[in-house]
Amino acid sequence: MTAAGLEPKVYIVGAGPGDPELITLKGSRILRSADVVLYADSLVSGELIASVKPGAEVLQSSGMALEQQVEIMTAAVKAGKSVARIHTGDPSMYGAILEQMSLLKLSGVSYEIVPGVSSVFASAAALGAELTVPELTQTVILTRAEGRTPVPEREQLRQLAAHHCTVALFLSASLAEHTASEFLAAGWSPDTPIAVVKRATWPDQQILRTTVARLAADLREAGITMHAMILAGWALDPALTDRDQHRSKLYDKTFTHGCREGIDADG
Image 1 (tube, rainbow, N blue to C red):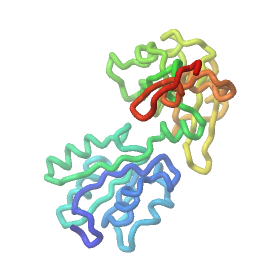
Image 2 (cartoon, rainbow, N blue to C red):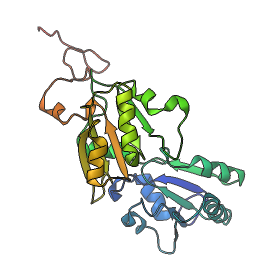
Image 3 (tube, rainbow, N blue to C red):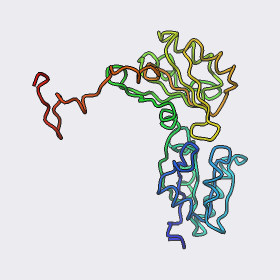
C-alpha cells in the first residue's frame, strides 16, 4: 500500500462526461489519493484535476504517444507509487485502454479499471430521453461511423441501422453526411428524430434536435464537428412526453411480478 492507502498499481478511472460531480465516489477517492495522475487534458475537467493531493505528479497525456504513457506509469508503479490514469466518460467505450493494459501486463504491472458515466447516458439525461421505450424500441446500439478509423465489415452503420432501434454514435459528428446516407440506406424515414449533444454536462453544453434528412446541414450550420454524441431513433422524439402511450409492465397494476400481485383490469 502507498501512504494514501492505494496499492502501487495503475488505476484506469472513468472521470465521467465533464461535470466534476459525475465521477464515482471510488474514482474521486483514487484521484485524490494517487501519487501520479495522467489525464486526457482536453477532455477531463480541470476542476477534477485540481482535487489531487499536494505533491502528486500531474501529467497531461494529449502530447504523449502510447509508449511514453506506459513507460511513465510502469516506472511509477515499480517505484512503489500509485497511478491514476484518468479517462473521459467510461474507459471501456472508445477509451483505447486495451493497448495500455497489454503493455502494462507485458511490463509486469497490475491495473484496475474503475467505470465512469458514459457520454451516451449523460446525453440522454440532458435530453430528458429514455433510450429504451416500451413497444417502440428495446435495443440501443453503441457504435461509430467509419472514418479514418475503419469498422469491421459486418458492423457497417447501414447494417446496424437495419434493426431500426436507438443508435448512439460516438466520434461521428464530422461524418454527418455519411451517417445520414447510411440511415437512409437502411430504410430509415427522413423525418426520424436525431438529437446531438455537444460537450454533454459541460458549462457550454449544446443541444441540437434535427432529423436524418437535416442532420448534415444542421450540424454544419451549428458548427458542430467534434465532442458530440449523436442519438438517433424514435425514442428521441421530444413529443413522447406529451402523450401517455408507452408504459412499461413493471408498474402496470394488472401485471404480476415477484414483488407485486397484479389485479384484474376490470376489478
